[in-house]
Length: 456
Length: 181
Image (cartoon, rainbow over all chains, first blue to last red):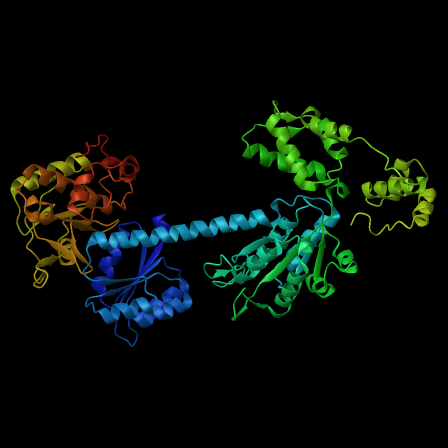
């Protein structure tokens, strides 16, 4: 790891800089030297050094502190070690105040300087490792787990990439288990805010008072038990993204508070008098039809319009059945690896079972079913027997006719369900219903079935 | 090899034997080199390692591959309080000081055996640098960094396998000396 790091030694005394450079080179570092502050700044512009040893007193109008300040203007987090022959408390304080990492007095004990270098490099290695892991995490959250060949889903992925660096509010709609959070993370981690926080709040999980303090934070004494000042999720998400899951479940009072944050980007902590301004991108998600909630006056229309700047509708899995084999294989590989099982394939019979299932719990249900099958599977291939629990549950559930329904209502429901299954494909639906296409068109008209809604 | 500023002939003979054995090289002992003028720092009461290295470079013997100087003088470089030795990385000149390898430097009873063992380690270490080896993470390898006499004692006089492989083929010694406790 050492040889990857470069060190700069800046000192006007040749013997000083060359001897230190030679000593550090024996440790495996690539060392450059600069004879003046000006030259050191030029070199820092060209190369991002791991450590800068800068002599405090250098002639030529630029001393060590000024050199360090210039370097830190170019390299914000540059680890600078100020070296001096004459230590005074004032210069030490001034060096540290201006951003020096260390202040050492020459001559140094070799052990002291060796430990100092080791410590700085250790931090640099950790920072590098952290950056690599972050990159991997970003890749993970980008599109790796969004496996699809469905045109609607591909459109969504394209839209996700296009809007990732905007600040516009996004509203994600979709049934439970369709991957709303995955899309929200993909938006965050593929955009400008990727290195900033991504904060998730489940609005359905908390009661009103708790949700309020969770979102906006509180001051000491704001309520019984408020022992100290606490920052809310909006503050924690500053410069990043806040993901408000199940926004449709947010109580009316909080809807008003949230509207204010969306409009003004500022709020007060509970019990607080100081207005807090934040730069937060809001991504909200719901399984509810918010337009319907607005009509029923359960959701504020002004908040709905604020949230619904960019809307993403994730189709349920039953409306993109072509993705089932793809997802099943992808998830099988991942889960088998996680649970350390040597399973490499899914039989055709098993795929048929998966394709025939309706997946009300969507991708999450598919993932759980695969995990259950993989854990109990005794071979290297998943077969229909491994998914027997799916067919058993279906058989148990059976089909019961809701009492009190007219034959016409039953027929309407049958047509809606079939169109839903065929994603609006009339020819296929007519075939499944055992009627011809013109009859199906007539019935769609008669029962005022909205074909545009099918597959949404 | 040359002594700079006088040295016990027994130690020089021991160093000569070690270099022959360890590096498989014929060693010629040059006549003594005088301590370079102005190399003594009155304030630090030490000698400039850089001045010694310069003297070795200037007096480099014709026909030699490497030139190593041994001295009893306590050496320093401006940035550090002392050095046990110095070498040109991938170069031809190396230098070892015995001053801080002696037990008496630390107020203890002289130990000629321990001194010889430490000297061999430092010669191996500095010559290793001249062959391009950098400090080794293996604390038992002679190429590991020692910034105190305790660390010199902790390492062995042998090169670890990866460091051995990086030495020139004719210099590789198959047997590695045992570690010192």
